[in-house]
Image 1 (tube, rainbow, N blue to C red):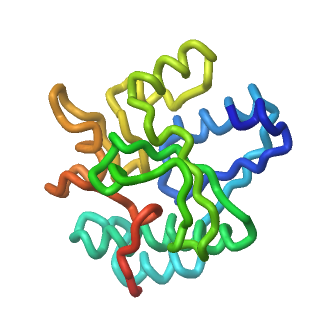
Image 2: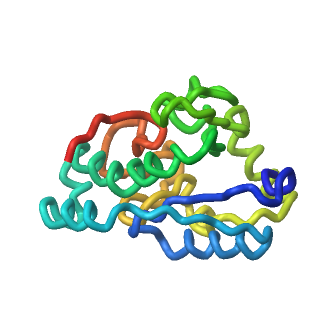
Length: 192
């Protein structure tokens, strides 16, 4: 939708260094289909190396604070470093995804990122409406969805869900909380 409005729109994504191959495949498919040049944001190499050296490569399994630290270094900080160069950003969050997102609005002032405009055009869409749009418009999507992954993040932190499970149950599947977030849309005040 966005590229139909503005062919020169900047499209960016985060590469944590721990993504599934299917995620890279959909990036390529989107670039190919829409002619979009996707800007890929990476975490700071030195911060990742220091974190892994101190806490191990799979620190996220050791507890929520360790998981927040990993998400902070691999996702939140690269985004925080990128967004000051923009007047606003567009997300794909929806109210039905998590308890934390239930109060999201289409237009918000993003205080976490310097008071820039945050636009959530799909905020009122249901999962069903998203999939109808994808099918009707032949939008490339991550093939992990076909394998039971309704929510996709880093490879070790995401699994397919079982019948009847909450759609976010596959994210940080070893945690019991129902409101699972990585920190991109909330603050956890993590200090390495």
